[in-house]
Length: 505
Image (cartoon, rainbow, N blue to C red; front, side, top):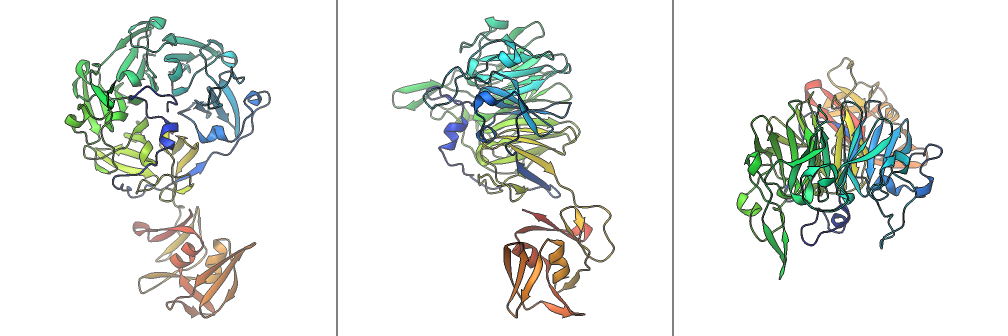
C-alpha cells in the first residue's frame, strides 16, 4: 500500500491501517473441501554480494506490497519500505532491481526513494507496488511514489515507460503522461499495459507505442473531510467504459479473454471491464450508488459477508489474481484480514478468520490469521501462492492422503494414515490411546482414573479421561477428537470419505 498521504483522499495505506484496528461488520463462510495452510516466510539468507547495504533484518518480510510468480519458479516481491524488488529462489533472496544503498532517510528513519533508470542494480525506485510480466519475460512495475510505470527488461535494464516522476493527470506519450500514485499494472499478450491510476481514480492504458490514454470517466466528486477542508474523491458508475467511474482502484487482473478485473478499493467492490462490449460492470460487492456518489464520505462503508457476489461485502479489497484453470478470482480483502475467492457468482473466504480477526498466526485455513493482506498471487493450477502485506506468507492447498485403508472409519494425520482401527461408540470415533498418541508424536506417561498424561520431549499434556473411554484387549480407547484437540490439533470429519483428518493448526 501507499505510505504517504494526500489531504483527505489518501490511498488507504498500510501504515495508516496499522494504527486503526481492523474489524469485520459481519461474517464469512468457507466452501466445502477448501483445505489449505499458511506459513510465514522466514528470514532467508541473502545471496553473496546482495542486500548488505540495507542492513537486512526480518522486517522486510513483514511489510511487502505485491508479488509476481515467474516461470522459472522464482518469486518477485516489491518492498516499498526499502524501495527495492526482491527475488526469492531456491530458499535464497537477492535484490532483483533497485539500489541497496539508500539516498538518505526520512523523518520516520525510513530510506528515501528516487527515480533513476539504468542497470537494475543501480536503478532507484520510490514505493514500488504492483508487478506484471509480459510474454517475453519483461517485468513492469507500478512505481507509486514516483507516479510512474517502470520496465525491467530481460537484460536487467530499468527504463521509465510512462510518467516523469511528477504527480498529475495527463495523457500523452511516455514521459509526457502523468499519474497519481499508480498501485498496479497488468500486461496483455500484445504487451499493452493497463494501469490502476489509484489517486486519479481511473484506469489507464499504455499502448505498445508508449502512448498513454485514459479509459474511463474521471470523478468530479468533492468531499468535505473536515469542516472547511474539501478533497477530490472517486465515484461509482457502471455502464459504458468511457463514462464509468471508480474510487481508488488498486488491483488489476486480466482474464484469458483479455478483459480486466479491477479491485475498486474505495467502492468496496470488484469491477469488470469488457473491452469487446466497451462496458464496466460490478461482479462482486454490494454498492449503494447514492452513498458512493455522496458528498460526506471518501469511501463507501466496508463490511464482511460471503454468498451471492452482488450481495457480498468487502472492506478495502486490494490485490487480485485471476486463475483461468479454475475460472476463479482471488481477492486480498485487506481490512477483513482474509483471502476471498469469487467463482460462478458466489464469494467465499479461503484463508483467514471467518470473523475478520486480524493477526499473524500460521496454520490451517480456519486457524490462520492475516494482518492487512495487500496482495495475492496464485500458481497456474491454483495449488498455492504468496500473500503480501503486513507479513509475507506462502499458502498452499492441502489434500488428505490417498489410498484410504479399509475399514468403516479411517484416521489420517497430515499426509499419512494412522495405523489404528477406530471404533464407533455413541456417535464418537474411539481410538486406542497409545497407538493413536504415538501416531501424533506423543508417548503415554501416566494414566489415572481422571487424567491421561502425554509427553513429547519436555512437553507434557494432560487429557481428561471421560466416561465414554473403554478398555478392550488391554487397550484403552478414547475419543479421537478429544485426544487430538487436547494436543492442539485441528480435526476435520470428511463424511464422504468416512475419515477423520487431523492437522497441525
